[in-house]
Image (tube, rainbow, N blue to C red; front, side, top):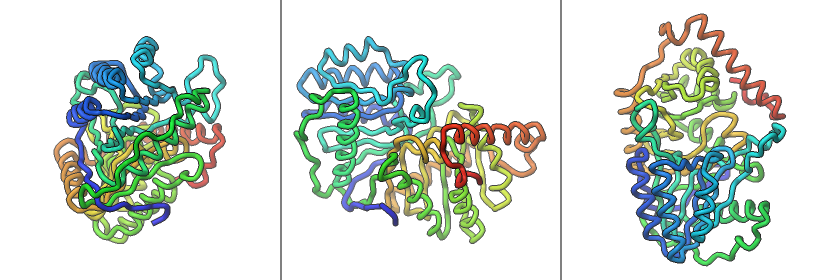
Length: 390
C-alpha cells in the first residue's frame, strides 16, 4: 500500500467514548516522569478540561517537561488566565495558527491542527477522535458523543513521537520560542509489547497530503466481504465515492454510519445530497441518533481497521493536519466492528429511498443548495474541486 509502513509487535487497546478515555489519559499523566506531549483541536475548560489541566500542571511542577499544542480556532475559548497558570506551573503551551480578530479570511485559516494525540514518557500514546471536552454534561442532556480512541504501546511509538516532536518544533520556531525546542531527552523503546501490526498516518500540506485518503482507498478497493465506515462529517470526493460504489457493485456489503443529530447544519445537509446516489449503488446508510456522532473509524473485512481524527470530507482530506492509526488485526477489528454493529442496529435509523423525511422536495432543494455552498467555499479558498464532485 502507498506510503503505508506497518510496524509489528504492538499492543493497541480500543477505548469507547470519553468515559473510557479520560480516566486512562489522566492516569498516564499522573505517572509521567520525563515528558508529555499533547496535541488537541479542542481543549474546553470544563469539568474534564479542568481535571486534565490540573494533572498537567502537577506533572510540570514535579519536573516533567510538558508540551501542550492547542489549535487556534478549536481552542479559541480556552481561558487566557488558565494558559498563564499553566506557564507559571512550568508547562510549555503553544497555539497553532491563533485566531486574530479582524484578520482577513484566507485559505490558511482553515488549515487547522485537528490531531488528537498524546505521548507520555515515549512509553504510551493515545490517538483518536476525542477532544478534551466534557460530553457527560452537554446542554441537550444527550449521552456522551459517540467516539473512539486507542492506547498504544510498542514500536509504533517511534513514528508517533517523531511526528509530535517535529510539529512542536515547527510551531515553536514560528512563535519565536527557539528555547522551547530542546534535544530529545528520551527515545521510544522498540521492544515488542504485543502482536498487533499497525501503521501511523498523518495528513499535512507537504509530504503526506493524501496518505490517509490513499490508505482508505487501497483498503476499500481490496475489500472482499464488508466495509463499515463511521464518520462524523462525510463528504467524499469522486475517487472515494466511486471506490465505495464499486465495492458494493462487486458484492461487498458497504455500510455507512453517519450523523443523525445535527451539529453543523450546512455540512449535514450537504452530506444528505449524496444519499440517493449512494443508495442506488447498493450502499447502506444509517444515521446515528442517540447522541452526536463524532467517530472517524472504519473496519474492512474484519481484519483492517482505522481509528483517528480524519473525517472523510474536504476540510480533513485537503486542509487540516490529521492523524490516524491503521491496525491489521482480527481481534481488534472484531471488537470495533461489534461496537459499530450495535450502534447501527440499536441506536440508528436506516435511510431508505422511500423515507419521506430524507427525500422530500424541500429537503432535496436544501441538501443540494448546501452541497454547492460547500463546493463554492472550497473554490473561494483556491482548492481544486475537480476530484471532489461525487
